[in-house]
Length: 127
Image 1 (tube, one colour):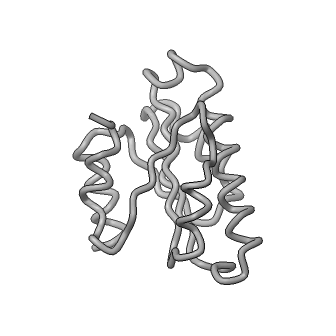
Image 2: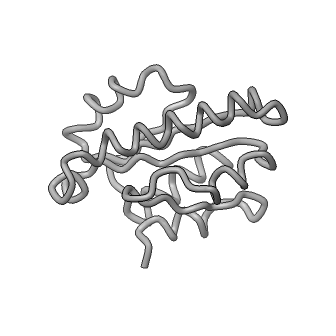
C-alpha cells in the first residue's frame, strides 16, 4: 500500500489526491489537476527511512514543490489559491527541514507519516 493512501482517504471527498513519485517529479497528471484546484497541498517526507534509501529525497521533493508553486503562479485561473506544504519528518530533523522551507506559503509539520499522523494533519487542516 502507498504510505500516503491514508492521507488520501482522510481528505474530504471533494479533495483529490494525486500521488507523486521522486523518480518522475511533476507529471502531466499533476498539471492537468491544477487548473481545477481550489487549493494545493503538497507533502514532503523526510523521515529517516526515506533519506537513508535516497539522500537526495529532500531536494527532489523541494524541486517538485517549486515546480507546482510555479505552475500555480503561471495559471491565471488558480493564481493566488491557498497552498499548503505538509512536512512529514523525524522529530530530530523537523526543525532543520522546516527552517529550509520557511519561504513556502503555509507549512504544517508532523513527526512521521503514520496513518495517525496523516489523519491528524487532515483533521487540523480540514476540521
